[in-house]
Amino acid sequence: MKLRYYPETDSLYIDLSGKPSVDSREISEGVVLDYDAAGNIVGIDIDNASKKVELQELVLSKVPVKGRVVTG
Image (cartoon, rainbow, N blue to C red; front, side, top):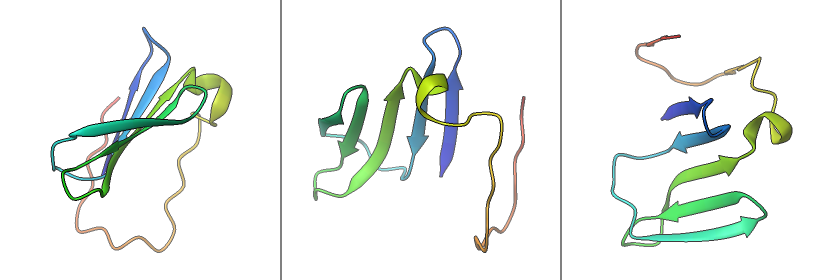
């Protein structure tokens, strides 16, 4: 899973899978779910992210992580 924030557009993309998106659906204003060919969610796009989520803090709890990459 990858989280990418784009400050120039104030959007956050949460990439849940390496599979390509073939369909997208807006589930609420500015929140779009991307789906693969099998109908599984592969990503979440959030517009105006700084107004909808707390970007200053990311907490992972009991997540089985083999490694970590932190860039800033």
